[in-house]
Image (cartoon, rainbow, N blue to C red; front, side, top):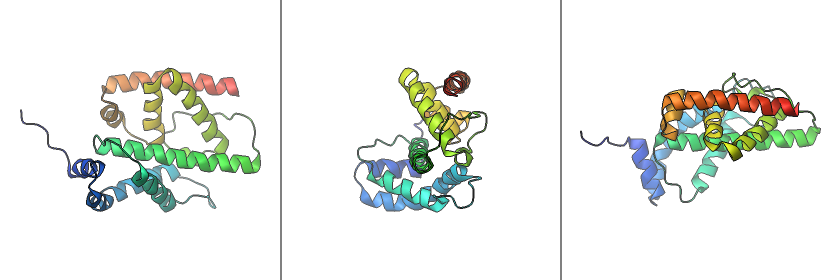
Length: 190
């Protein structure tokens, strides 16, 4: 069986990682719409007057992406998984700033079955989930990564399996266990 040829996006990612600056210029228009879709998913149902607009989130994520050094881009899915992680961090930073400004309190309840409307949640919920996810990552890194990819990036089971190079059954099993673990951690705080 002949080897599977990498997509044009994957080829450009690899060229960029290998120091070809012109590859970034050719890559940008190929990934921009997908980055906007990811940002839109993160920003869906954001209340009026939000501090971060979808376009600003895409641009901030893009600036952080081009600043990354020494990333060995595996493929398109890997790129978008990293992009989603960066967007999550940007939104989390904004949430922490809002909480610090308002001096909010208490550990709120987070419904993990609602994927991926993260930005519509109050800042305290995002922070509580991030804290619980960080604790999960310390004991079960793959399960934490699955939550990040499914919940924050909105990837399907199959897309998550491809990024992590595991079976879809493994993703589903870990997803269910991770949700149970996070629910217990969040209810213990509340």
